[in-house]
Length: 289
Image (cartoon, rainbow, N blue to C red; front, side, top):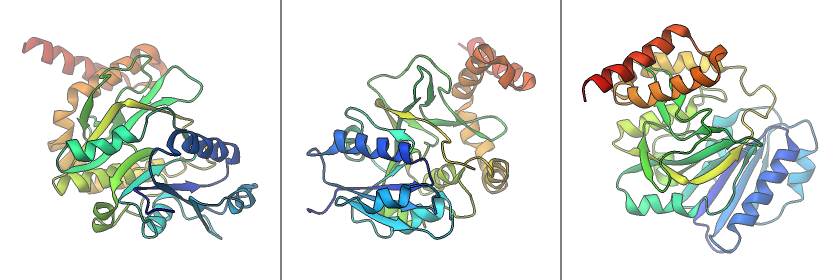
């Protein structure tokens, strides 16, 4: 096998059906188009995942945990084993399609000082989108722009965002390793946003290729969201002040649009005060034109 250009890193905990579909889509879209390897950590799965993974051959490299370690530790471990110039972080419940990876790689050639490159993610089996980039609310919490949208704005564009989700994204291996990888204090949440913020502090920018569209089951693994509140608290303690002083200001319009759409389509899921706040942001913007 030739030296891979891209190392695809996957942490797996159960959900064997998702893993099979994820790998089938990888092979269908990448074979013969790019040199790649796939490094997979079996995070102490309790189903038939171990036997399935052990039956795989090149370009797969398999690692097994005796105890559950979580996303950040697993990815950091195999990133150190990766041979590609680029690392693609991919959840096993993400199903790629079409020409998804090559345009993401091209961003590193067309843009300067690139940190993370993400893509648009649609909820699997749905017309709704879930991620088009990460923005920050005035309170400093991260939010997926376009969450719940039926339409896909910015077609044909590569746009800069404050962060992207690690469910499917791309980074240079040397940059990831130089920055120490994901912060392992986070458990299955916010480690991607934290890394993006550290990259921003290092002078790098993050982009989304809006014509690279993948499907995401989202949170398929058991226990995926158990530490959400603790992860969010740690992110705020570490970054809250800087987020509110910087990203939350530049992101206010994008945040407001996403939150208003959520309120109009799923009113039970929003905070009334924050909804009014979002209305005010857009009204003030229109008043300044």
